[in-house]
Amino acid sequence: MRITKYEHAALRVDEAGRALLIDPGSFTTPFDDLADVVAVVITHEHPDHWTGSHLDRILRAAPGTPILSTAGVAAAASDYEITVVAPGDELTVGEFTLRFFGGSHAVIHESLPGIENLGVLVNDELYYPGDSYAVPEGVEVKTLAAPLGAPWLKIGEAMDFVLAVSPRRCFGTHDMTLSTIGRTMHRQRLQWATEQGGGTFFELDPAQSLDV
Image (cartoon, rainbow, N blue to C red; front, side, top):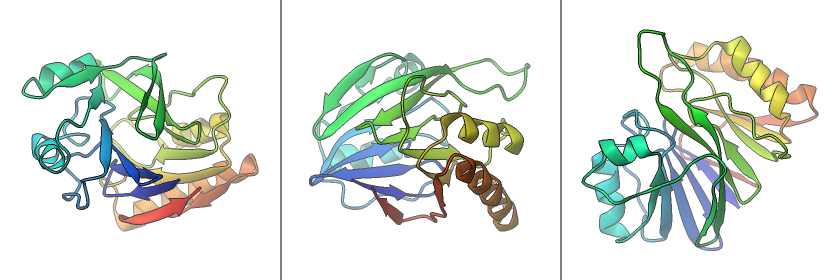
């Protein structure tokens, strides 16, 4: 399986000639090579995790591609056919078995309304928590995509999340709100946390891939 990181929170997962896209949002440049996409996962409704222009581009290249997300996204993206999934759900699309965890977006501030959020485990290999620190209980996470920066993120809490998951491999994502210096510093902190459990941290920049 090949995992490719794009700008901010967007990931592409390739397996046996098919592709899964996760969180193609407003900080992410347009994707190419979309004909082999079999599903899109959107973890929550914030625009840095999905846009209509991305969905239009995907659906033009791969008509009928299922879009899997929360009820909040289904309401916000009412022009699209959204398959609503929830924590505890499991389904298979093409080459991908998806298990969903979590339920709530991390708190930004008490003045802002809470929203739904999904963590997703792909093929029992890659876990991405969306905008949360939701630990997939009872799961041995082989590869973790861990958030690096966000209005809701405190680096100590992100380190504790990585320590709790204890993945074999980890890389940072959700990072477009950080300067180059900030990204480097936060990567170093998550590298330390990954290594405490015997794992390896990978520094992936946009369009770089990890084969697992």
